[in-house]
Length: 424
Image 1 (tube, rainbow, N blue to C red):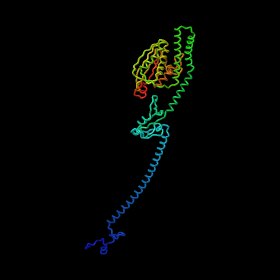
Image 2 (tube, one colour):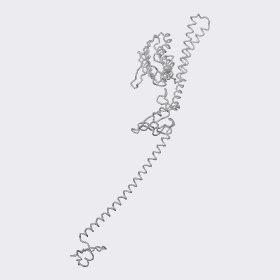
Image 3 (cartoon, rainbow, N blue to C red):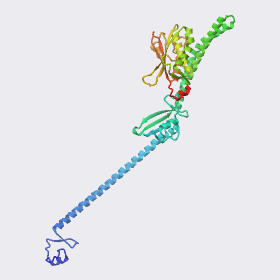
């Protein structure tokens, strides 16, 4: 040791005798261990054991997580497969729907559509701006109502639903056949009513026809002076004119639809009404007061049918008073609370006996009339003409206070291409 020999060297082991109770030789290493080294080895072994145990736990946990991940992945794959299956099913349902489906994105472009929508609106459709599709495919008409006409003549109804920030969905339904069936049903109903009406109408025609034949017989006798001939000729013309009006009313009621090809001012409407009312006013000694506050406005109408309908109201008013009737006709522009566009209100007011509430509720039906020889056809024609003009007709009456007949008609807007074309 004085020569600096290390105790760990083999030489030192030969030179020094060490009590075996204090030193332990490590197995297989040829080295001796001190208590501190033994403690270190024990600590190392303990840490190794703990590390091994922790690794086993970690390995087990990893296996559990892998198993859970596998289960979650399988569920996720199954959910995706079910969603994809549902998406395919919904796509198939949309493609087989009888109506058109158009989905717009937030910029107003067509992001999705089904084959029916393509059939309605033509190609290209997907990716197009909706406003461009409207300009290209739609051709609005005056009689569209709640539907919109396409260029090929079909009529479709449009329903929209918001998808929030993602855009909106548009549903298109072909109403062409429905509109045709409704028109056909309405026509059959009118024909049925016409068949029921024939017996009453035959009496209406037979009376003036018999009078005309009687006057014609007197004319053929040859024994009349010129004054009497003139009187009988006028009576014959009056009776034939009455028959002609009855036939025109009947045809108008059966047809139901009217072409609205005339654009006239309200001032012109008054002129035509005054001309048509001249004979009934003169022959009955009646007088009419006029008030027109809407002369500068225009209406899109069927002039002859509209004048005839108002003339029916005038004749009804004259017949209700029986003699010395005092009528008042008002033409004014009004705006209803639920509409922004002004409308023309035509009012025919008489000084007759008025009607009870029960009779007022039924007036306008076929066969319902206050006249002993009437058919009720006149007011039915007024209803038909008003509907054809997209207007409304209603009566106001009270016993002892007279009756007021009201006709509401849309006032024409000259920014409409159809009206501008008709006005030229």
